[in-house]
Image 1: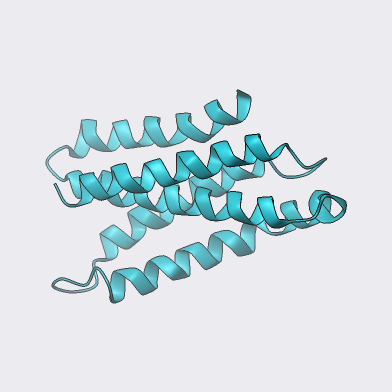
Image 2 (image 1 turned 90 degrees about the horizontal axis):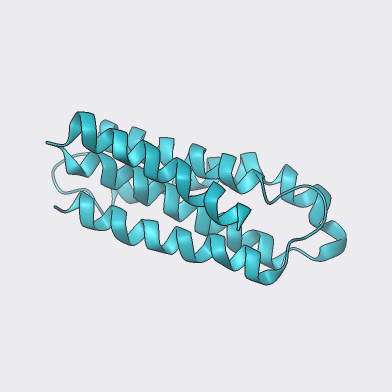
Length: 140
């Protein structure tokens, strides 16, 4: 239950602040939530495939490189797939902020012993859900 709250609360609070102060631009919240969700899902997949004997060290050491990889994938998608008019630096910034917050949330699952697959799957499901919600906001 703790991981569920830690995975959802940061995204909801920051996404709510985006809507509260920048509600006229739903795509800002959408890019934040999509970046958050994609990074949380990627971290969950990585944690799931790590063997238990390497989990304590590798999970913690992979948070920062994983975040950088997700941000670089955000650059790639913003410059190619989602390039409607031009590379949008603000959208990139918002999705990168989401990636950083998701990495912090994912770090709560790293360290000691490997959590159960069900606990890791919660992060994956939440990440996928936030990508979907972010997509809805981005194209609204």
